[in-house]
Length: 51
Image 1 (spheres, rainbow, N blue to C red):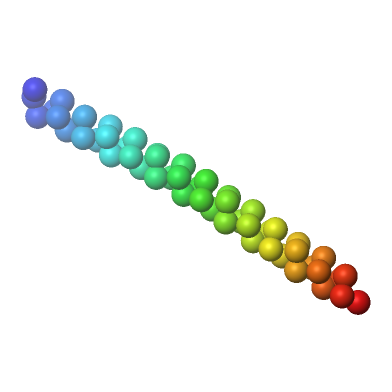
Image 2 (image 1 turned 180 degrees about the vertical axis):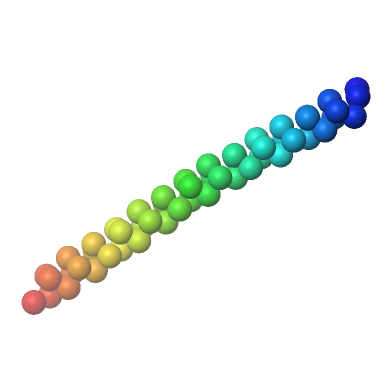
């Protein structure tokens, strides 16, 4: 393989890896936000029930 082909292959792999990491990060952020919202809702509802 020529050096140019190897360079392009490396760039493609790095780009795909970056996209995968971004998708994983977005998924993880969404899950954490959902858990935080659930916890906050539970605290608000349980505080209202104690009155």
